[in-house]
Length: 281
Image 1 (cartoon, one colour):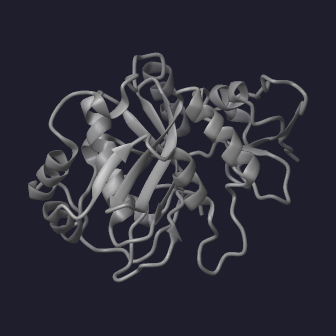
Image 2 (image 1 turned 90 degrees about the vertical axis):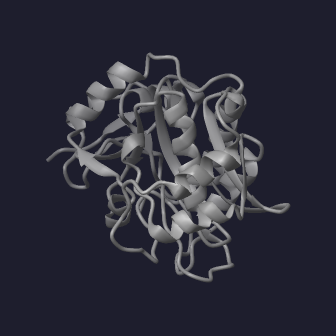
Image 3 (image 1 turned 90 degrees about the horizontal axis):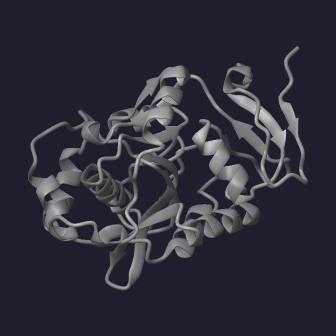
């Protein structure tokens, strides 16, 4: 019987086993324990591993096979979202309210008692943000933070973590803005980690873990997220989003009123309350 590797909880740099040793049931569980130090987290992402656990559990490290990813050129924009982008309802910023975004993502979803974004996780990712690795996209309705997302950028790979919305389409607008920036900066892919039908409607697809690791080996060493963030050149944010709204390219054939999986999510009509749009189920 396979059991996951037990990691040293005192070591700053976690010694992860090869991802090929991850369990098949549950899919991808690789190791238990360790720390959420920046060194451990960056080493994990670079090897195709991510932490995911609840407050009552030890730190669990995962590398599922297959892996769900979104290639920036394959984003699908629904008809209703296209209309919202053309109307210019929201203002978008980058890395201006990271702690607020992750706190909003950590709020329990309706019908669920807890969250996997524990206080320990929030502190770890806020530290990565201060160090220049973790980034957020914020969507504003006036002075209200209406939605957003956060994740980790290593080279030309963005590892998506979570999204939330308080107003209709706000998290989708954050995703479109992220894709626009990543396209401009020549990023290769967004790691969505855990598969869901809804992610598929947005253009994400599963690839073999071995291929995913090959992509990391190729693109993580490349120059990626610029030091000046959103000031990376090109047209203004609002103009870029409206241009997406006018495009007639790929779009999903149906709307989804449910957000699931581990990052990009959709929104149901008329929702004003907080909803967390995790990539992870």
